[in-house]
View 1 (spheres, rainbow, N blue to C red):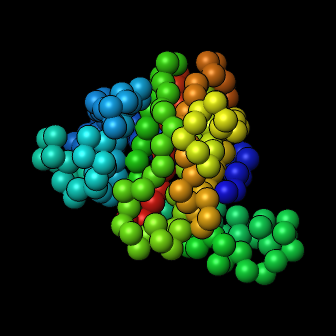
View 2 (cartoon, protein in one colour; view 1 turned 45 degrees about the horizontal axis):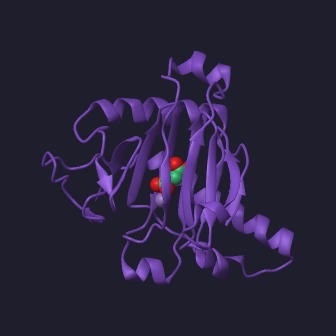
Length: 219
Ligand code: SIN
Ligand code: MN
């Protein structure tokens, strides 16, 4: 698991926010999902590439709720994801004095991006991401997560028990990667910290206070 602090530049963050806002208002855009495994999702969601249906815990090419094909993932988002994986490998090799980071952290080309928007009361229970194909999971192809806006208290653990989970703050511009051995980590969002979005970002985008998170995966 790799956390790249403050990795997305200010202009990347502005571009991602504006692009997601535009896509989110169009066909296949943001909606309030119902339940997953009986737990309600306290966030707004939009999927790019393929749609993830929280009630079926499965992907589909057409969003069954309204028969809309999800928007494509913008090419510049995927370039950032691939660069983040390469940079993480460099970090693993330097920190652990190894040369085989490529086997620990496989490369992936995203064909799914789940975009979540959390308001002040947003949260997400501990879960694993395991609806991708068995091959993708078996290879440990990473999930790459971009955080923009308010800070999240992010929980992660080898077990589902939130009491024993570790906590890390995900701030605007942070990129978190879980692949290889950490691909099946339990994770969730305990709380969103109010008024933690960088002022310049609010001024530049007129963005409604909250937190935007994008998770990229390969089906
Ligand atoms: C997720 O697990 O789908 C999102 C995690 C996050 O918002 O940081
Ligand atoms: Mn997840």
